[in-house]
Image (cartoon, rainbow, N blue to C red; front, side, top):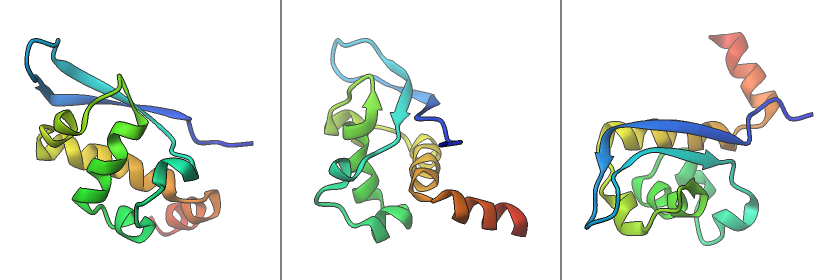
Length: 102
């Protein structure tokens, strides 16, 4: 049984507004599967590499966002997103080990 939610919500401190579309105020992030990470470096992704996170984000975000919208996300919001992505990459055993050392 998976104890990690398949969707995690991030409320953006600074909504993203591009063009006439409604502002994006929150995103739901879906736990990526291997196909979502095609062409990405998992090592860089786990190290919160900005380029890797911005490439993955349009693949796992709801509502669907464009690469331009992903690039317009302000840094505090991107860090919150990156923390969730990094958490998605950890196995249950790794999370258990981390919780024991905390």
